[in-house]
Image (cartoon, rainbow, N blue to C red; front, side, top):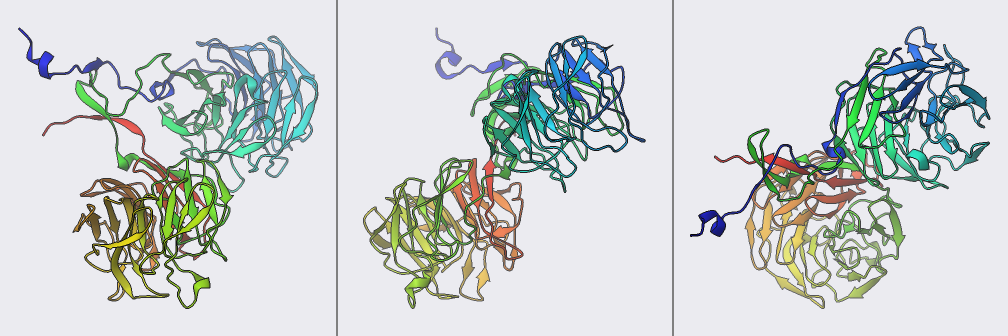
Length: 623
């Protein structure tokens, strides 16, 4: 006889711990053996079970430095031979038996140094000095192949030098001069490295740069701006932890593209020494300021095997006695810095259904208002211009390689300012297609290059003359369809031709800024859940039941607000880094970006902010 669960049931896996996105995501910090001498701003080298620290600052006031060297076996630190020149704020590279230290500063306030010393496992020997003396520099690599970058000379430096075992060579500068950044890349650092954080010198920064052996390229930012960080790992799999100037315990893992927050240190600390030859599975943090000088060591350990996190996964956690599900919750999403537009612009078009790594914006940006740019998830590149230049929020439907745009303000079309011209982009160039039935600007467009909807808008410069008319595109021509319930312009829109929505905007009377949402099902409009505030010149991307709205203007004040819509109600998200309106957004409810816009001071912007919602485990509750 069959059992009921064999007919209708399913198995739920029982786990002792939660699933994780990576081994690093499942990692934890624990207490290790204390240094024999508390200190900060020292050189750290080696691995968790074969580590070494050298020199550093052993008192805060007056500043004092030490020649002391200690070795770590994964349990205890042992004092060994001393360096030839005491110093602090220096860089280190290599292993417990073959290391190199470079640069630094002599107390109490001496200038940067260029001395280099080599370690053979038992003693230090002075070797060839590098070219530009400095302190607070970053370094990594091996005893015979080291890279150093940044530092103070005095004054913040962008200089980079590489060591081949006998001489130093100046190579390409950093894009951003900085001190006390973290540089990781392991044994291959001279060919491939990542430099993260630092001080620029007015504030701690979150920016990150990658080195390919010949030049530095700007990459994705840390989640938390900081200097005085400790780092370990290789250029595709690294770990950044601690830092200042307000000491932090935050730890972030790097996967070769982006940074993800993982388990914190037990103690907030900056200027600690790291096992820069270590991995994201095994590392140490020794000494530092916390805020006084400390001798504490913490050990990082991540599992060699783990159960990966999978969206929609349901399991039972036996430790917490709870059923859990893996999902993406919009309120946990974050905005981070992306690449910079080549041309600043506001109230322009974008392919709302494009992606975070294949985006498209066009129009505005100054006469002749046809500039087009593509985004690859890191940088923007200029493409062929629109045939008819235009601006003033006319939107766009489709993707990076198949997008349609129509309407907009065409200064060259005087006296017909609100153009009827429509164009389609094929990933290379724009082609004019059949015109709209009614010229308009400040409208919303969503859908695809062969099935789009254009909603509302204004008929002329300065308005109001706001319209309620809607036009549908079938890949060949535009057809008038059901009007929106109330005339509207300057709104945001999202979705596809048969399932979309608009939010906010202004009505003729006043004009009045509204917070109303109208939803489209392919034939009729109905009211949806009101946006949390009145808004105009906002941007939106996503689907009818999973969308993100960001930025805009609340009557006369620019806003940084962001919220997610589930087809009925709104949830508040983390805000943009800056209040702005007239931005353009591409993507989905869990992965997208906004670019450009205008801030409260009236400045036209080039910044891109990327939206990412992490996968996370949530306890299932039954009410």
